[in-house]
Length: 316
Ligand SMILES: [Zn+2]
Image (cartoon, rainbow, N blue to C red):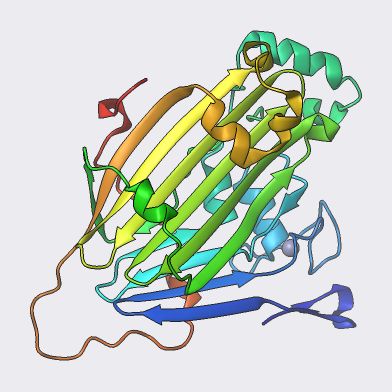
């Protein structure tokens, strides 16, 4: 439960955080879910004059200062999925880290598309604000989750999707939106994470979805699969995209259905990784998994040490 004092301390805003956790030894899984990011400083109540103290800044000030961009319409800073292994390795999925990987500087889109975009956004002057350095307004991110404590290797092993299609009992399920933007009614850019735990396995799908109406579609997906009998997780990243003119064979109604359109888009890039869990020194002492919420102080961002470099990956 987060308490925020609004201007003057008169009003104390209670921000309910939905929270659920499960322990599937050796994993501890937890998610939190709450409201969208405020559109102004929750301490001063102002958009431009925010918290003075960076250390204790509110979420709005932290996001606006550290991410040099106009934030998506909806950012869910408290929608976080966290998985922690008893050996200390953890995986986390959160909006801040996803947005940190949005390119700054130039727009990562072909000129033809940018031209079409420009035609449709004449009234969107905020993108031309000089105070905001250029950034990729599609919020394209190759965020694969925040990982720590794993050894990352390229692999030829693939996720067994046939196995996933089996109707195994679902013990834990979560579906969180990390951010979403409607591109000023020109489409959508969103990032969501879903996870399900079955007896002996778990599966995560993290998806960035972009649709610029009449221009293009792009889907970046990270899939993580783990068989609890194994000492590693499989992580597959795919980036797919197409211009709308390449998709004449597909009914445009399908463009709005993420699950349907994603596999129909041509593959641009893919990486296949093994996330190996470090073995602890064999010791007879019990390793205790924290039963209650693990301290959020440890949630400092640790991007996965991508020793498996994307350049070695396959290109289709
Ligand atoms: Zn603030």
